Image (cartoon, rainbow over all chains, first blue to last red; front, top):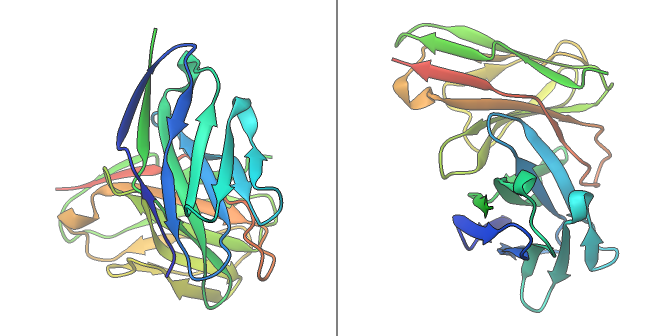
Length: 115
Length: 115
């Protein structure tokens, strides 16, 4: 079975500084990986996804993630944090089910942005 | 498009009561999913469906039932509510291409408390 581990439950940065949210995955085959964001009391929104094309994936709102097979990592980065980036972020791997692909979520990382 | 809609937004149940969480999507998606989200645990898949009349268990199906009689609707039924079912429930849908991990679109969630 596929799994993901988000290495930090909370990350705190100052506005204008870089963001790094770390994710390691475990997969017995070439994985498909996603980052989703959840703002307080809202549903989840897709930030970006990797599906075995380019290893550097660009998403919405200036976020990007790099797939590194040798390190089994898929870390999320952003050059400059904005107050509106404060949210919970989920690293997700796609697992093959009987009928199709199911998503397996990490535990989440809460990003706090200080002014 | 309204996307994925869920009702109700909030509900308090007494132990042993029953209720149905409603989910509707207007994107003509084939696949639909139910997740529960507990603090610090990410999202866990309860049930999913790949089309009308076809459902399958996810990671945590005990205590829940689903049906899928139409493409648009995927209700989740709790028969005998227990405190362990206190959680936030998310419905999601995706187009669903066999063998392809496509993007899931999430509803705003239903916050359920069982006392």
